[in-house]
Length: 484
Length: 96
Image (tube, rainbow over all chains, first blue to last red; front, side, top):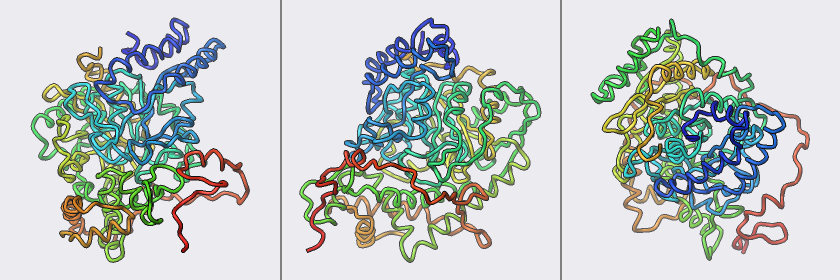
C-alpha cells in the first residue's frame, strides 16, 4: 500500500515513474476524505492546489530531477503562514485570515517539490497538550477515537499516525511535537533553537518556539529536517551554521555512545512507564551504548518556570491581535477600547486568555522581579545543569509523557493538571536543546514514546540513535487498527 | 497566593480582554491555581545566576545595513483588513 511506504521508498517509486505524484497525491486526498471525518485532524484541505503542485512535481520528475521530497505529499500545522491559504492557528481570531506570504519552512518545502494536502488542526495558538483548545474542535487519536492525540500539534501527529500523509510539520514550544508523537505512536523531532527559521510561523513564545517534523521514522524525519533547517536572514534568531548531512549519519554504530538516564525523570515513574524505559535502555546497551545515571536537580522546576516565561512571551506576542488590521473584529464597537477588548475577548478561547493574563500578571509592576526575572534565572540554572550533564554523556534519555493518551474531556477542567503533561518535554525547550520522541511500546493498547535529548546542534547524533533503535525494534511500524 | 476578583479585573484591563461577569469566578480560580503553582520558583537558590537572555550562549542581535530592500505590499497585506477606506484602517472614532 502506498501509504505504508517510507519517504525514501516513495521518492524512489516516483523517480522510477512507477506512479506519478498526482496519483500519489490523489491516494492521500482520498484517504483524507474517507478517514479524516472520524479524526478531525485537518482544518483546511487544499485538494486543488495539491493536484496543481503534484502536476508541477511530475513535470520536474519527467525532466530528470531527483530531489528527495519531490512530489511527496505533506500536511502543514496551521501555525505556518501559507500564501493564499487560510492560516487559522486553531483560533476564531484568525478564522478569516488568508496568509499573504509563505513561512520560510513552507517556502523551502514547496521549492523542494513537496505537495501540500492541507493544514493540520492544533491547540489554539499552540497552547495546549491535547488539541482540545482548538476553535475547530478536538482531534481524535487514531488509536482510540475517544482519546486525545496530544498537543499542540495533535492534528499533525494524528494525520501521520493515520497515514493521511507521509509527514507533517509541527511546532514545539513545551513539547508540542514530541508529546503528540508519543501519544500517537510516531516519531517527532524538535531541533535546536535557531536551527529552523521561525519566519512566518505564528509566534507563541519567541524564545522557546521551534518548528520541526512528525514522521513515521527517524530516517523519514532526517530527510525532511535536512530541507527545513538552515540559516534564514528573515529570522533574527536563526543561527548561521551549516546543516550537516543528517541521512548520511543515520547508520553509524552506537558503540561507545554514552546515554545518561535522568534521575529526576526515572525516579517515581509509574511502573509500566518505567518498564518501557528499562526495555529501551536494554536495547541501547545491546547496540553498544553505555548508560549511566545523571542528575539535574533543578529540572523539577521546569514546568513552573515554563508557565511563567511562556505566558509572559505570549502576552506580548498576542497583543498584535487587536481587531484593527486583520483577524476577528467584534461587531458594533462603541469605541477603540471596546474594539480591542471584545475583539480579543470574543476571538480568543479560554486557555489563550488564561495564558495572556498569566503573562500580563508576571510582567506587571511589582511582580516582574519575583516571577519573570526569577523564572529566567531558574531557566539559566536548568540550562547550566544540562550543559554540565553533556560533559559526561552524549545524549540523555527519559520518557516522553507521564501517561498514554487520556480521554477527551478528562483533564480540561484544571489547567495545572494539563500543564503537568509536559513535565518531561519542557526542559529541552527552556535550554534550547534538540530532542525527539520515538515509539517504544504500548500501555493499555495505547502508544508510548521514549525521548532523547542532545546538546545544541546534535541533531545528527539524535537521529542516528533514534534510527538504530528503530532498526532493532518495530514499535514505529505499528498501525492503528482501521488505518492499515 | 490567591488572586482576588479585583486583581483579575485589573489584569484583564491591562491585557485588553473583555471577560464576562459570569466567567470571572472561573478565571479568578484558575489564575490563582496557576500563580500558586509557579510560586514554587521562590524556593530556588538563584543568588548568583544571571537571568537568561537567550537559550544559546553568545548570540547577539544581528544587524543589517540601513537600506531599502522590501517593495510595497500594502494592498496585498490590507486584503485581510476588517474595514478599509482610502488605504487606511477604519476604527471607531478615537479623537472626540
